[in-house]
Length: 512
Image (cartoon, rainbow, N blue to C red; front, side, top):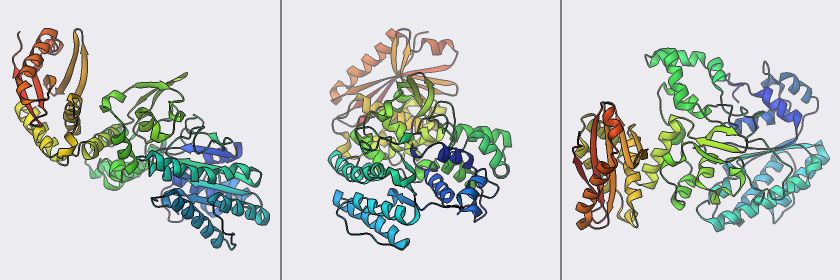
């Protein structure tokens, strides 16, 4: 354990003491790598009366009192179950895990066909021999998320879980405390249709900081680590803290509390280097499966998007709208909450870059984008749009043939945007002006590129599309505002030739 190894421990036990004394049945949804498992481990130690682990912590007195009559704790982690092919295999794996728990604590259970029956035996045995028990279930939704690309199988897995979790309500009188955590919210029609006695604290302000680090906690607990990183990186400590905040802070589930992802922060201090640690730690397959199955658009579409306050619990996660899915998986967060309307946005720089990387890695299958990104930056710095399009064509040439099936202007334009943003270039789609909406605008140091993106199903149509794009830019005067700023302005048309699966550039001078 962290405290036994004399490791740094950010004390959340005051909030946990409040949790266990104010209620008895809870559900908490948080993205992966957000400290849910550590939170349950701490609650387990609290109810077990592990006084030695809580010295000088906020809940010390509560744990000392609890140690006079400790509770038996059943902690079950669904994330430890491998991905199963059938619902029967999942049911058997849960039964095996419960049987192992019973054996570890010196008793046995009768053979059952359903995992819920085995759970019922354990709860009843603990009550008869030791009194009220505590049940903690981590990553309750993993078997469903593992099958998010197959709706039929996801429903079959959900039925197994429903038969398991419904026992928790029927055994309510035998339980001292119950808490479940996971990534996805639960809907009344899903796993918890019969488990309606849980208090969902996922988006409540009272427990907004129960997992994750606040900025104040970062400053108070990691000051020496911050100094060491500043020295290693040859940076001013205050300036470095500002960069860390921009890169890793910003998660919010109540519209007020802002949080850092613990895994990213700890990884940064360990390496003294900015990186997309959350993504590279292993992006779950269920995210890619969902993104391929659903038409998730340009990431910019989800900036400052407004949704109803109950948007996340309206449907099961595999059937949810993209903004709900992106929120539950941690890519969007609550920017503002006003009455029944929530505004969502990306929490920080790491998440934005991680999403771009996922698009390029797994949606567009572009494997050279890191090298291309550096070259794109150099080409734009030189104002060489021809070279930019050449690099875009390199990316297109590396995409498998099958991935071009049924592609459109949107697909070609979106890939182009992802490459630019992956390189750290400020690029925007559908920029509104006083006379219309330009397809693309690139802002780079002292350069602005105003671009119309056109699609030619056949090579013979490419020349016509170039002319259409040029007329559109000139007639609607898309570049007027930029020219008045005194910046260098490049006007161009990029035509995606679907027959060749390549792009062509047509740049031209603007009338003064």
